[in-house]
Image 1 (cartoon, one colour):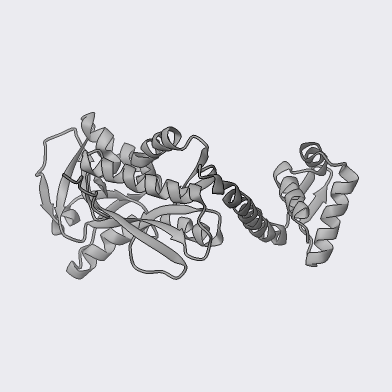
Image 2 (cartoon, rainbow, N blue to C red):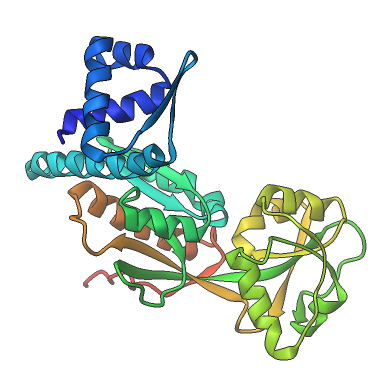
Length: 315
């Protein structure tokens, strides 16, 4: 199996036809088709279903595509690591962010990266924490921010901050208390994500010891839709405080502190323990830590910093 075969396979899968792929890859269509046939023979599996409309990946092809992209990504990282001996971070870095973290941190991280490392191409991937962990372990991501500092095989975690989770309601109507008990949540109609969502699990686990039965009037997976539903008065919700900063400042939503130590979550920056770290990845990780620490210190991200303390200037 040759690297060019992997590149050709990925190119055909992305183009959806041999004709389009041959043009993009600058190789004659018959030769490209022969490379795919040879690859299928070596793997002992059919990678594409052919039709008059083009080609489509089989289940085996979809599985192989994931591995092919990881191999090609590792090769590019190895090539870039050699170039990095010049000392200037450059190349692509894939950073995974959960939706609630991406909402508040994507633009500050991108801006800082463009300013400090113009030769680095930052690829931001937004998804649930569970997916980010899988993709980090599979090699599709170089770094990821997600929740929970508990040790996990294959992952190196750097604790950054404790994110406060608050009660969120519409700003219309009579203002409620600025602090409420955990038990008081049972009296509120709530719009929450589904039970498999990490934030929902935090809420359910906090309520379980008190045997609280929450009145969940709707389950919505989209953060934006949850906030719009609350603004419309359909119900209240429970979210990280940083994810509603803009709406609170605009007078569309209100928040109240939930009086429970369980209503918080730890944000960590994670990397794969078994994959070489390029200078670009190391630079981006340090930059992410610095950006988030600055956001906590200036109040842009209402949270408690638990990472390394900024070194004090010597007198």
